[in-house]
Figure (spheres, rainbow, N blue to C red):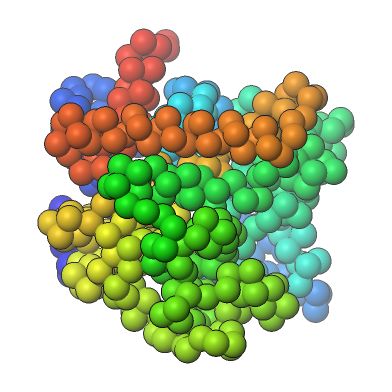
Length: 419
């Protein structure tokens, strides 16, 4: 078990959460051995010619945790703190996440240890294409389908799709999701994660008999997921009182105008300096008295040392792994309702699945059709998790893991071992 003195390690958290759910399910050791650990791990060296002419080498990873229920699926992130353990954890969570929303994918994840904020567009393209070439044997529309993640986007996916297609000799749009619309991307994909967060918050409010209109909200992280969730909550009548990004945090007890804040972020790249708001520290945001807290940044944001300060009624995990297990226990004891990440932020992979289906069928849907399908999937998954939570008297995170792990366990038991 992790302690407050243990250095946070996302993979340790993933394994601890697995064990808790597997114990609750009563899984036998044979099944655990088959589904707990990654099926395939690739570490690659990525040499890149920088703009000044010299060669710089980066470390890259692609981890396929499971292909039991279908092709592996998971994003690729570019970040200075990317490690193999982090990628293994994210791939593991992707397996359970896909199973929770019952889409026919397994989990994967990739990443490069780099600082994209200090790289030019040309350097990023060369690095992406070299990385794609290095992981080429592992990816493909029937095998492993990457997507955007932290500091990657639709342009990154276009480079991956083009590199893969040029190698194969014909266009293969289904090799990635999160592509530009002009290359076979899906309407509604960019806002899918934040929209999924919003749908699960709606369901949580309904369960707790709490009005969303007028509810106070704090959002940690104003990237793709956090900004879209904040916008939808604001448009639904909630009062978003605080928002942070990597540069700072703004607060107004009367509520922020999210449309104007998104405009400022688009213009300047940061939320700091927003008129009619005061700057506060990131720790203060987490401790604000509010109805809903949305951690939408990186993992391990809420730990044993700061969980007791949290005063929210609902925590909606838009990020992957923002709560440490020790924080979970503290918050559960305080009666905080947690919407776990593998449920809360599964909107992104759900619409990625929709995009893949559209690419494979060469038939594309209207945006409202995507939204309607996503809402049905997310609210059905919420009800499935809530049922386990109530019937088995386990925390929501354990319930979500039980649902996802149980589905993967059933699949592996039916498939057996070959040869």
